[in-house]
Image (cartoon, rainbow, N blue to C red; front, side, top):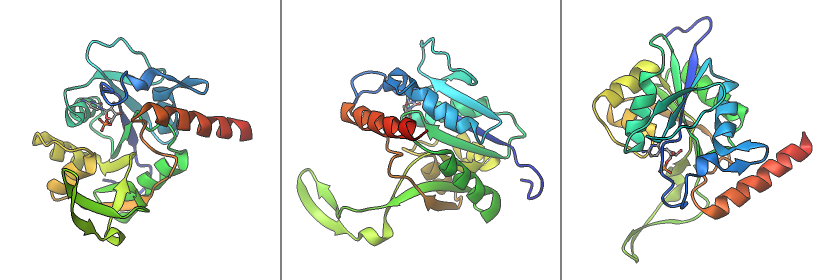
Length: 220
Ligand code: C5P
């Protein structure tokens, strides 16, 4: 890692999920004047020298301005596939869900700056919990978890490339990338996330995203 001069950044956009909860591959659905995945790639490109998009096996998707690779069964397998397409000399790698089309360039820059300047192995965007959180077994409450110590985390998540590669080389699985780096012993810091940077999971989420895009396009 160089602490002076220009730091090189690449982003892996993971788009190889089947969209089971959504009912269809949501990454290619129209959102404003582009597709869901194009929004994620477009914002990633503002801070990255290169963007890798990980697509489902057997898909023939093309994405302007991106290197395309085929994903795997789990999200972690898809990230591993994406890492193989990132050049060896890249200092910082970001991983972003294609299903989060509304992250801003400012958020990407915040994540890069935290890894570049703070000496951490990784940085994730987090939001304070506004609801009370409970641990349950089936539908019975077991415990109320103090929410002051909790954040819900988003993507893009950024890492020193060497650390992310080493963490994933051990065949780890996680629902995000930071959990894999944490299990490897890496330090991860939290930067401010964005309420509009939600993950499109259910059909209603796409309608919500369309409303945000319409507002943003209206103020352009
Ligand atoms: O399943 P989940 O909502 O956590 O997926 C988050 C992101 O990971 C999505 O953008 C999805 O396309 C991607 N993914 C992937 N490969 C998988 C599973 C999920 O690239 N096997």
